[in-house]
Image 1 (cartoon, rainbow, N blue to C red):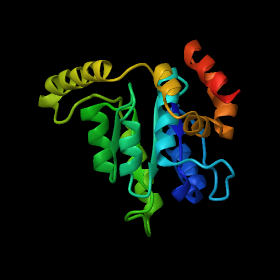
Image 2: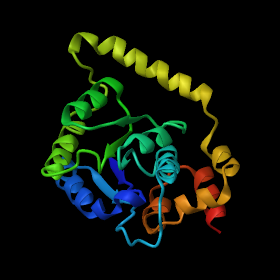
Image 3: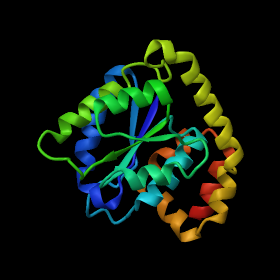
Image 4: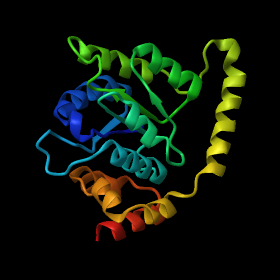
Length: 212
């Protein structure tokens, strides 16, 4: 699985710690981690939580990433932004229990974490335990076990609802404010990783045209 990390400007100083913690947990499981920034508080390429949502949606819709880890101060803004887009199912995660239940019950492909609220002493340990429980088993396994069938059925229904209520990602990118989208896609991580991993020619062409 290709897992992308995206940080917005208010919590960019924590990027290195989050990236190292994520790699420590998931690389032994056989997953790959791609750091799309922001890389530091001084990073000249700034991302807002809204732009995190745009970038996350581009990565997931194109197949350049299978899962996105993002967040903001509270995690709420990043979660709302991500869920504005098609084929993105983002959970607001604050604890290892949240992570496990979101994975098993909701089978999403993105999480938004609070990197400021209640992130004090031991914050990196909570992150580690969250990542462990998020990826300890394939998503959609259900919990409790007697609820597996209705939970899986509801997930399929939600996916079908999103297919109806959202348009395709290329149309969305072209209709959004050009500078907003360009800002979301101009980071070093996109240049380094996106085009090599993208599986959608239409989205790749759209991103190239926006960045030209």
